[in-house]
Length: 397
Image 1 (cartoon, rainbow, N blue to C red):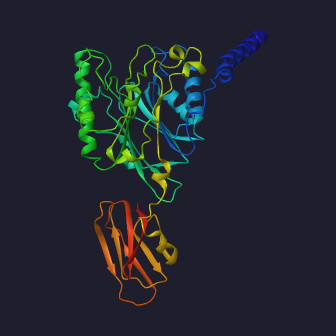
Image 2 (spheres, rainbow, N blue to C red):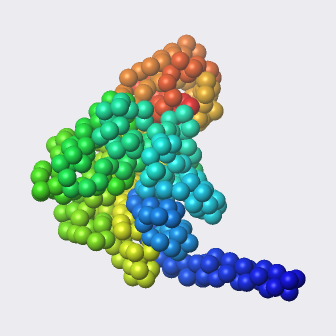
Image 3 (cartoon, helix red, strand yellow):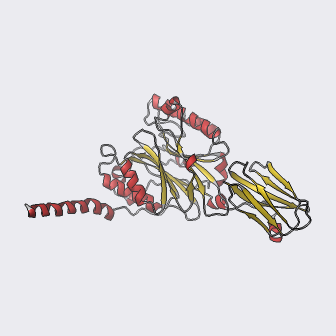
């Protein structure tokens, strides 16, 4: 009995090694797709990830391949759909924790959405990150999967910018009810972007389950016509126009990215790609990993994180020794200057003067300016002296 028990233990260990070890050995060698100097944003439906009864049958192989793709492609932000088992997601997040922070949706529907972001580039704003609280009607349109909003701030640059990521997974299938629900979801999404998030930098990522040119339902007009008519940029439209497909088993571009107008100048046109050659690096990818291919696009990271000096003031910056601190700030800033200055103005991004303070002294100047009544955001400190001016950007947290 003792010998048999010992043999069983060895057998169990061997079985564990074969299951666990083999997936470590055969984790696929996906190529690096991200660019080190750009902001690379991707989304991917990972087909019933972790579910033992739906999707790929070998959960260990699927897990290893998903982990390898996320880790090796080197995207900066990666939105995921169809996270169907909390423990699998938790395990994935733990194994990627050296590089990425993560957030998962809280709705009750089985197929959850999530997002990973590079922790060296972004920090999350918790009070602005949640599943949208939608009406019962909109919840029906969203197939009980309301958008997951995650608000991220850039770090590591000379300025801070804020991006709102909305991860969606719209209703599937090519029937009239599903088509109409996608129309309703598109209308609700447009209302939210143009209301609550007006003027913000917004990126909508996910499995939209329909096309932009014509619907998968009877080739009807796209359920997203309202967004296209409003001239929103879809980086994924470049892919659809080129005949690309994000679904593995049919020529259909149903995974998309949309950006708000505030991000148009940051997007590199022509950068959108679909990783349709993933099967080249992963044998049986469409059956053992996912029936969708990841899509991604690139944005101007330098422009997002570099302080903008207004044209014509760079020469004056070299002549005037000025200190503005702290920056970022929660309450106030102290302005010090070794030259006589006439007035200090705090200007918001719409060009409005929100604070103005005059100087009555003829020598160097120092003053504390209270910003506690201003909303969080980006402002300019404009200093005027003898008809000349200079600007510095500050962030009110």
